[in-house]
Amino acid sequence: MSKFNALMVNKDEESGETSAAVTQLSAADLPAGEVTVAVEYSTVNYKDGLCLGPGGGLVRKYPHVPGIDFAGTVEASDDPRYKAGDKVVLTGWRVGEAHWGGYAQKARVKADWLVPLPSGLDTRQAMAVGTAGLTAMLSVMALEDHGIKQGPVLVTGAAGGVGSVATAILANLGYDVAGVTGRPETGDYLKSLGAKQIVAREELNETVKRPLEGETWGGCVDAVGGAMLARVLGQMEYGASVAAVGLAGGAGLPATVIPFLLRGVNLLGIDSVMQPYENRLKAWERIAKDLPMNKLEDMVQPAVLSDLPQLGKDILNGQVKGRVVVDVNA
Image (cartoon, one colour):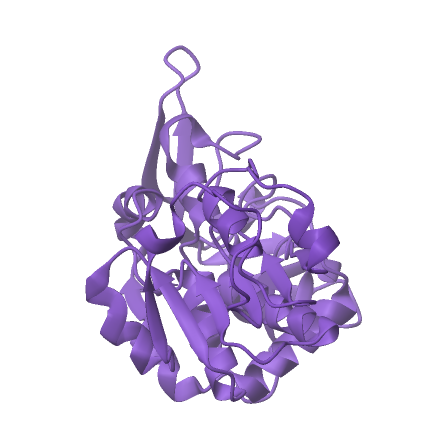
């Protein structure tokens, strides 16, 4: 039986320490599922950093193959919806956490977790978008459903994966985008994605002194959360919405109900993990249509399997810009 490479994470039962290394597996090692995929590309997301980090974070069982998304070609299928040779993409459903994920040259998953790769995207482009990009598109769609107001659309954590794609999508749709970053050197990068305004993170990290400030933002994709989200809520236009996707700033929300009661602000929680098939398919089709592919390369940092242990640390430390695309066959 042919072997293939995978990044395997193990945990020492006595010390609790984890270690990751590229190893060889066979198809017999893969978990149960209806569809076997020859993986071509995966990515590095914040959750991947947690899975690779000390103690393993979100991993449920060891040994484990992380990688919360992947794109590739169907190799074998017991489900009539997919046949050998079909191009597919997978995000969510705890893949890379409770189920082996994309940091391997082969994966076996449930058919319901997959989505056909939409026309106009190849597998590398799909992972340049990845889970972060899907989350960004779901956020934009939620803002559109509730109506984006006249002011600029704020994107917090704009230099990260979700923020980068959200910035590019919103700018391509014709909105004035204000990108928030704590790294001044990323200003030119955000402008290349279409941001009209760069906001220093320090401006929004101050403790909330008044529950309502001037009406500044017509919408917001918040990839940070915590104190920054609380501050932004008080700056939204009347009836504007915040699509909240991130917990990098913490799960707490030191805010009051006043922005919601007196200014009609909508707080929209976006979770890409358990999205129904129809939502995922619509979002991927919108990505192929509304995300300028020529800007994807500005976001992409290439990587191979052996790079992942260090990249896991880097993303947890906020040192990764844009999207990391992992060529699992390189």
